Image (cartoon, rainbow, N blue to C red; front, top):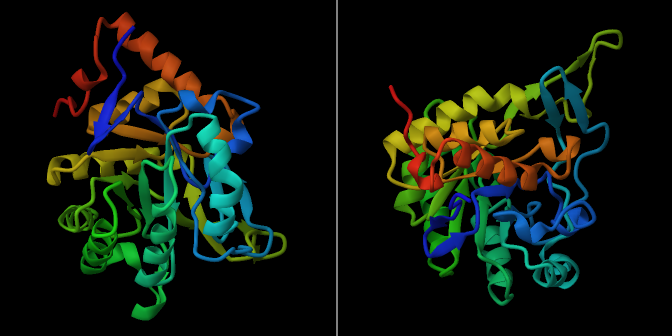
Length: 303
């Protein structure tokens, strides 16, 4: 059997397959479908300082080749996560990366500070697709200096992994990834959802109550592959690839493009066992091609 282990910073993951934030709830909801300790990492649903109820419905819409969502970052808040979710994740032996967000740098830091006192967490994934209210609502992840500063502030608080989740809704993502590295990030996740919308023609109204939402699924895979490869070539930092991954071949395309790990998102709704199936299929592919270690494939795209 091939060696699927990967390393980011000081953390070794048993395999490169993660469950993407926002599509796997807090992890424990999937325990009836699979052994979550067999997943490389669970990137939890985003956590804020206080509970958030999210946007009004309708807030999900399936398109021809992907899923639009405007959930509005609904979550139970960091206190409830620590009390009600994290203990079970520890019992199940899950490898946990907590997705963190806020409307200001202080809120990000407050969430991270609360989590620092808890065991069973390998690191934080900073969701920078949120509006920075103190900067006039500009999205954190679109300004390199804001990315660098916020990353550095979290880095100064913790010895755990700091992973920055990047938005694709920018002209050039490489300077954003470089800013994350300069701020001390151990890795970047790419990509978050692309902005999109759907229209009910007969009603001449937006399908989503929030008008726009984030597009995920097969439609964004070509964009995500391009972004991962750009970051791999332009910035010396591990990349976690996300976007339209449904099987091992999809995942290995991201590895060849330069990703160290991958995350499975929307496909979890179609088949909740996708993550563990990809691990199995990866082993089968590498064995069939007489590849002893996944690292032999990383960044091997021929141009």
